[in-house]
Length: 141
Image (cartoon, rainbow, N blue to C red; front, top):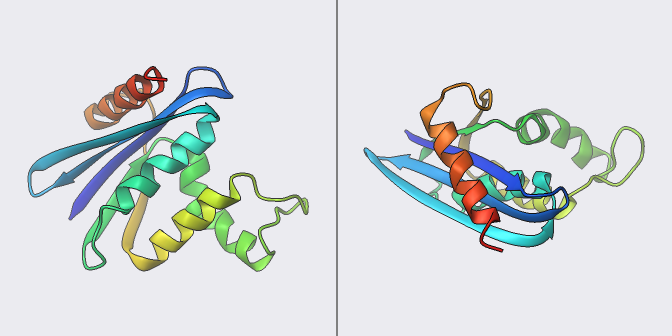
């Protein structure tokens, strides 16, 4: 079982942002992160699991832990309606961050992923660590 902790951060929203993931595999932790200028917190929250899942093989069992309800509910609930409704919300508006949602949707379909929400800043060591990594990445811009 591979466990992945993800987080995104924006210094101002919108503004300079960073994303990070910690991939726990075979007792080893691998940290990945990146940053973008002129972005939003939600885009950073999405890029974290996208980039982590790009590192996975299709035969691996994966658990993702995110403190973002936007990511958790988006990929496990809302996305199915968006696909049926041609990427429109219930208000008939275009889904925001559609490009990233499509990428995450395709990765999620091709892998064995269980999505978990965890409360932010509630003492989970891995969540705290990935939060700091995302903030550090955002500051690199």
